Image (cartoon, rainbow, N blue to C red; front, top):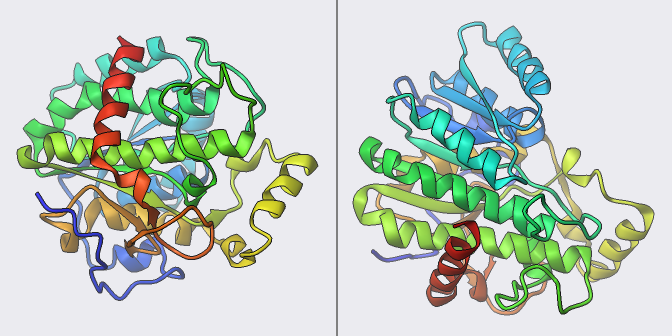
Length: 321
């Protein structure tokens, strides 16, 4: 399997929407699971997939909010085929329970979209004791994917889409101190580490399962006003602006339909058949770049390093078992 990291020439762009990239696409008979489906990008991702005929399992922590989101989608698309799954990614017990409930149904899984996440949080721990951005954004998703990947093999061809961010260039993951037990905690370094883990996760899924029919991609959706920024206090915002002061273009905002477009493109585009382990943004594959500048497009080489991806997988396995 060769990871090319070269654009497909699909013709889409940063301004393309979910409706643009799914125009003419029939997803009838395809079943997807979307985490964080009750709001923001997860809600729009679910809506777009369901509008094109897919069955979508909406996984979210708040069951009431998830049902409200389901009703919102059905108000626009009365025939939307939606299911619900209660899932708290900050609890490994909840993840195991959710995976078991999902697998109790023998139907296939053609697409797993690991969308949920938190950003730039104060220092905190999950119920299992992990730094919460690492625990929620990566480790909960790692366990969920690991539990569901054999079902995806049975359902192949299938794809995993892991939402990362250009923010992965704000901080690398320290594989010897993922929980900030020996370092001073910085919200954006921790966010960068978690988003780096997301890219490495996609790389290793693709390496392990690509020849079994399951391909994986990491996605940067762009800047979108969603609940992801709930922890953005004035001090945190000042810290962010200091980091990007030399490259303000990275703060160009997208609508939710533009932000979710890369996700649904990566999950469905025929142009990605036979490819995987790549990083996508603005509805195409992005190149590998040197350094950690937040300016421009592309994925840091350290985030697609196959050896580091394998090491992270092995560490994550130890942490969840």
